[in-house]
Length: 441
Ligand SMILES: [Ca+2]
Ligand SMILES: [Ca+2]
Image (cartoon, rainbow, N blue to C red; front, side):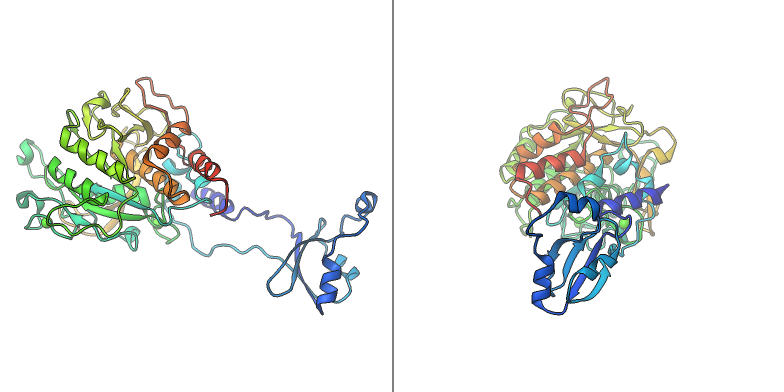
């Protein structure tokens, strides 16, 4: 199954016909012969073309002086009519040599015709080159899918008692595990470490073509890992400072970010109003041109009651299931900007979202892949598409980004409301490129 998808994707990247060869590269003995062969027929005759389908048509002259011709019936014998021909060879199709990512076929959220975001239509334009996605989350783990993807991030967890790295803020955003023992955080039962930040980051920008695992929505974008969540969550004050820092603002005691993010992903939330301080941080980020994306929440209630999804100017993302319908757990209503695949959470894991995680139940053990579901998984798909958009047109404002995402979303079955519907990477990138003027990247 996945092989078929991978090949479909390669065909898109190449966008050349694969049937019988009709193009030839021809070398001539001298410039005069080449010139004679590549000049158009001074008296083109429709009747002549009718009886001579093999008339080579000049396509291009190459830097080496050789010429490229199209021949309708693919027969190189037609070149005998040209004087001074030295060699005729087929213009062969060259393919990318990277091997496919073996788990790509299971990433229905990227390519399923009904429930996916149609990423394969967006990738020929760009895979996110030059764009930066800040992921404010539990931090990153060493994982081959993130090798070369991570910019120097920061640990904004100020409370050493829950940070598990023995201190407050520091330049190492590594996830130390967020497992809970029974009784922690006021909960009776314990839980395993989630490696939530790694999963979210790989959904946004896992490496593509590395013969390993999964593919991110914007696989050539860079990730800025910012740790704000630890055991029992994280303080809003740390999130506020992290939004400021990732968007290029000054934060006391923290060196400025080397490259400000194009988009900030917030797969986190708390019930209640946005609040003035968080609202200020979001407004300042947007004033610097940074797009802020937040998960709408998993409580099955109105998204308008969940911060930061309800902060003014934030793109609030609801979740759809494997069938492309509103996920049962997703927050909903007028507070949702649009929706993206988040997994069914039905017990059938393959209907959830596959991404990179660590296998450790408490501390890091080894890099693996695993399924999670939630609006936390939907948001990074939107953030990834924002990176594609910014890569295609860095001049897009935060409002332009929202408008394109909304205008190009697909209708989704959301009886309780999921904003504009299903995120559509292909249609959105089509629109961005068209508005840019259609010039090549
Ligand atoms: Ca620390
Ligand atoms: Ca990969």
